[in-house]
Amino acid sequence: MVKKVDSAKSTHVSLTDAKQHLGELVKRAAYGGERIVIEFRGRPVAQLIAHSETEEVSAPNIVREVPTRYGTATLILPADHFERMREAGERMAALRERIRAESGIQPDSVEIIREMREERDRQLAGE
Image 1 (spheres, rainbow, N blue to C red):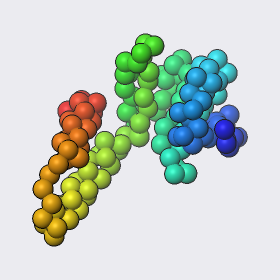
Image 2: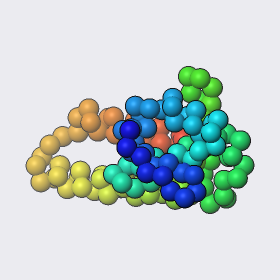
Image 3: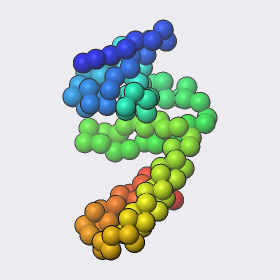
Image 4: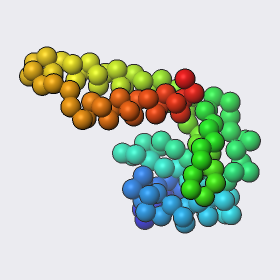
């Protein structure tokens, strides 16, 4: 597992490494007081912290309790997370329409899956 450690007792790991070592990372956050910063393509996208530290989360973040197989997990997302995802979805939809218009390709299962994911994201966002 490749990791970088910064001065604030945070460990940075890639999303792939986080998936492979989730159990270990959860224990380090929960019992070792470590903050695990998960990166995607070199950019921080999520943070794993002990549940007792969630009260310290600053107001501009979105905090969601989500059910898991083992209880609940707290997700801490940047305040503009859902807005950025919505904007990205709009850009992708415009590009998809342009490609469809130029090539004449009709919607298929990919389109249906995309719509299902968008509905799930709206539910998570509380819309």
